[in-house]
Structure formats: structure tokens, C-alpha cells
Length: 459
Image 1 (tube, rainbow, N blue to C red):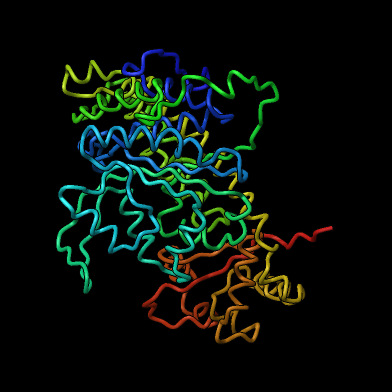
Image 2 (cartoon, rainbow, N blue to C red):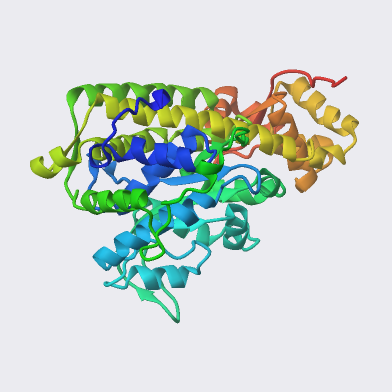
């Protein structure tokens, strides 16, 4: 467990390493995933009002974790045989409902649950096949209101909504954690589904774990068939009951969360480095969606730091009636997030590989692409209107934009829009605007394309 600096042996003094070690002992899972399962299980019972206040608002402890691995390699087993049983036990003792309905439920069903004062929408959702959930939520539309609602659930609120069956006139406070699973085959079979969900705020709120199962080859019969593991009466063995009772203690932590000075400094440094990385990518890059993912890294690192702080110091926080996040908690959160980045970059590579290479352009003669590029190269900077006129595509149809997209992704051209485009127009003057078919005065900023380099030929 050295990777994450987890060494404590007492459950109520540090839940995360103990729960992670127990899962690792029962299933051939990597430490990265068992640590995240431990964090998510603990987070699901932490009260909603245990939160940290930052400049940008309140940061709660809810996290969304998804594992991507082959079918049959223990994706669902930890939830079905451990986490579900523990949370059921907790719910029986507290008369609460921490296992929430599947996220594939309708928006109306989710709202109906959220407005029930006795039940509420606070706890853990499990989605065994993430891709099916995304496909159903997407409804085959470019814009899905269901995705928007799911993303708001991560944020901690459901917005007002009125239909024939549901009337909600005020925002509803919710607290939702998520454990999901999927296989590479289904995740990359239709990459558009996942990318659509990503840009509507669901995919970029998820922390991903990717692993290839490495099964043990030294299994012993005593380990495979333990005598005193399951209890028919309670449905929990002795070990799991200890963890369930520990969660009952952690549920008492309803206090505000603060950072000490060292933790503040380390967290601010991480935010600045993250912002530097985001600014380097740029919105016109072919990897612009990485910006959308990385921009939440600081917030997520704080979530893991908060959970870690609660995990390792329960008795102290109960006595002090506040939680103090220290440097070791922040460092834990940052380690988790840096690993998340590597996983996400793997996903990006697989998404790109799964899309037929430049599918739209592949059906277009490369000579047409070169014609577009040569015209842009000739003018060095050209307006979208002028380019469309030169290539005979005045309507600027799908083929026009597919070729532009191809050239942008290939780095052959760059795009200028918004305020920068207005500044270029003002700098170059009326004659250039006339040549570029830009009408003056400029009410709407034009789109300009700048030549960058020739198209690289593949061998």
C-alpha cells in the first residue's frame, strides 16, 4: 500500500487503507481501484453538509468512479458481494436508503425520489454497464436534458422542473456518489455516445480506472473456501460487519471542513500547475476536450483530500466538531488525480484509435483537401466566406466543415474567432475586408483560417 501512503490498521482511525486491503485480499484487483472503491464507499455515507468552502463555492465529498476492464474480471463482484451488503446493513440500522436507484431511471423518477422527505437522494448509485446508461440517457439526441440532470446531481442540486407528472419550483439538494463499470469493447464501439456525454458534463465529472486483470496462479484451497466468512443470518461475515459498524460512526461527521496553511499552499500550487497545463492546450486544439476534463482536477483533488482527512481522523473530528485537511490529505488527493489523468489520456488514445481514421475525409478525394489548404496558404489568412466562395461551397455544407475539421486536427491551419477575429479585421482595414467578403460594419465576428503548415503525407 506504499503508493498512496496508507499504513493504518484500525478501521475507525483510517477506513480507506483497511477497506482497500480487504478488497485486495478478496479479489485480484489493483490497488488504485480498491482505494477508489474505499473512498467512494466512505463518501456515500458522509453527510452532505460535511463540506469545504472555497472561493468558488462549497465542495462536497461525493465522487464518481468508473472502472474499464474486460468482462468477467471482477468489475461488479466488489459491489454485489461487499459494498451492497455493508450499505444494506447500515440502512437497516439507521432506517435510511444509501443505495440509490439506477441512474437509468427517468428524470421524473429521480426527482420523485429526491423530493421524498423520508427517502431523499443521498447515497451511492451503481451502474453495471456504463455504456448502456449513457446510450439510454442520450436518447439519440445531440443535446440530452438527461445528461444535464446527471451532471447537476454531481454538483449537488437538481434544478426546478415542471411537467405533467412532476412540479418542482425550487432547487432540490442532492448528494450522489457513483460506482460504474464497463468494458473497452462497449465503451469504444460507439465513441460518439461517450463523447456526447462528456461535452454535456457527465463524462468529465467521472474518475476513470483502467486495468488489465492479472489473475493469481498460486490459489490455495483454504483461501478459496473459507470456513467462517459468510453468516447466513446477517448476510455479513465478521470482517464486513466491522466495516459496516465503522461506517455508522463515520455518518456522525456532519461538520465543516477546513484546510491548514500547508494544505492551502500545496493545493494552490496544484491549481496553478493545472491551469498552466490547461492554458497550454488551447481551445482550438484537437485535444480541446482535455481542457474540460482537467479543469475539474483541482476540485476533485479536494474531494479526495476531504474524504481522506475524515477517514484518518474520525475520533479527533467528532471531538473537535470540525475537520482539518492537512498536507498528507492534499497530497493523497493530488496523487489520485494525477493517476486519473494518465487513465484519461489512455481513454483519449483509445477513442481516437476506435474512430475510423478521418472517416468523413476518407470519403473525400485528398486532392480536394489539398485544394482547400493551398487556397488558405495562398492568402495566409482567409475568411470562412472567402474560402467557401473560392472552393465553390457557398452554402458551407457538411463536407466543407469536415475538411476544415480535418485540417484543424492535422495542425495545417488554425482558426481565429471572437474578439481576436474582430481585432484582425480592424487591423487589416476595409480593403482587406472587401476582398474577404466581410461586410462592414462588423456586427458578428467572422471566422478566419490561418495557414500553419503543409499536410504530412503518410507512408
